[in-house]
Length: 392
Image (cartoon, rainbow, N blue to C red; front, side, top):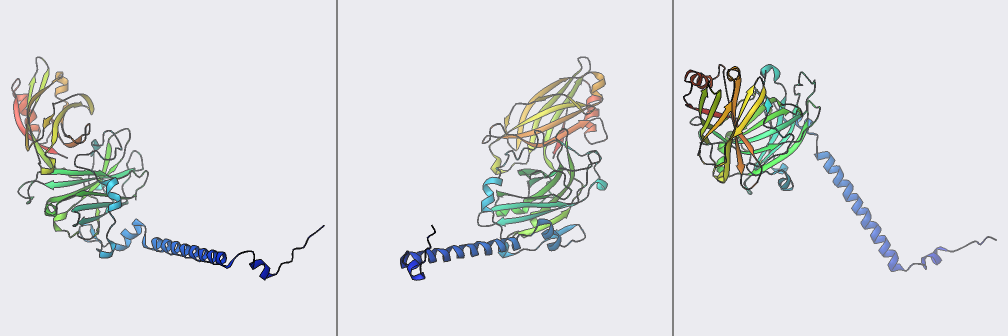
């Protein structure tokens, strides 16, 4: 048996009151407006966010020195507050740990022929918060390694502060901050888009130089250096975001201190004595509470034989150690070995963390350290002291 329900429109309206119908209509209109607003916002975001590589190619112009300047716009002020908690590092803190030996890099056979590519980055100084914001955008056309025919690049950023305002009077620098971008595997044109920031007084901008080292990650060996880019903030107006690009150059060492070392070799007992007497480093007021120590390593035919370290001393402009590190070396090794002195910094606020300040390499070669080596071999059983620059 089939029942046919025959209701008119007026009878259907009686099922709902007019107030309920108005509520349903209002909710439907509100939902439609919300959907339209979300759609318009998504379209605007998609139009304004261009790919980094396209923005770098369209908005930069090259000059003779391989340095590009982008445009500065008031309306494009970077939103840095959301990123500060995740990317800001305090002085001396350990950065993203890609490897337990990040300070070990290989610069063998590195010359202009092996350097290619460019790096793009953005600089901005927020005067209200006294913060310097550095954004590493991307790199282009990086060289591949000969043994792997690929590259896994990342960028190490160092903020170098000159001890004196006039760099011609003093070449001694102090590394205030270190940052590291994420690793991009198997890419010659990686996009990083990593942002870092730190507190910095406006008066100190004229003493600051930013050094960008593009490195190739190697899990089982030393990281390779693909080139560097550096920029001095003394001649730049970064009160608004400024996008820059620079061709990669051959990496250069920066002098960050000096060490007074004494060397003595005793052939009868086959003993090498390395005296770490004094260490002078660039001293910044914000790094008053820190500790220093030196680590001496002996390498022979690129193999590390042994190492010793000094005790920790409270860091000053000139830190006195007066400690002797003793190594037992046969005669055939003393003529082929290399002495490496690594100076590390420890912060009391971060227990267990260390940062490499710089290194010294002393060996039988044609370098300036050869003089100290020759004097040691000519004056056996007598300590010979000499100052050596700490480089990084």
